[in-house]
Length: 56
Image (cartoon, rainbow, N blue to C red):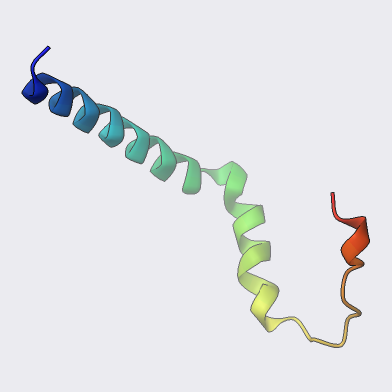
């Protein structure tokens, strides 16, 4: 295989990966998760910090 063919295959793989990530990000199943994440900066800071030893 010559380097041009490998670069072409790599480009196609990266394009398919990019399109897959775009479909995943804009899928309706992710909307609730992203909406909740978008509201995080607007939540009040008076909540106690999470217990650092209880991370999973």
